[in-house]
Length: 171
Image 1 (cartoon, rainbow, N blue to C red):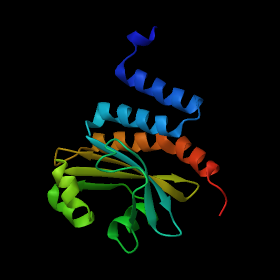
Image 2: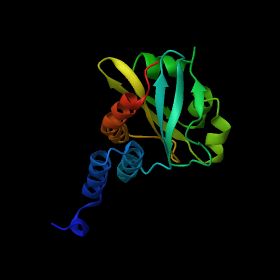
Image 3: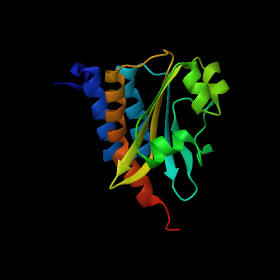
Image 4: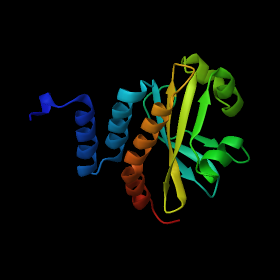
């Protein structure tokens, strides 16, 4: 089968594989974003590294770098979201503008982008949260199928998190 005959999903999986074969975590995040978009139809994807010592997330990737540039960070100390996602390692689903407003300090920026729901998936390995993969959608509600697709996308990001963690200088 030629590349042009591949389904969009197969093409997406192939792009993720190529990014990993080249050792390119950023390209992997971008390919995962595109692949997840087939199921989620999200309009914003961000990927954050979790700094457990500071209870802070640092953005590694953004599908909208003008609004959410890589390198941006958020303190999650003492927040319900931080406890749920980073410490308890549970998926967070926020549906509707009220949920966005309740859990995110940047709710105005999210609203201005027309986003009304969010799925935040912790990326966990050996009991440690390495970061999150986040999908924001213009629709107010998500389905179980959406949550399952977001979980799969986060699992696909695990090799990139490992590569970036291995590349960090020891503290």
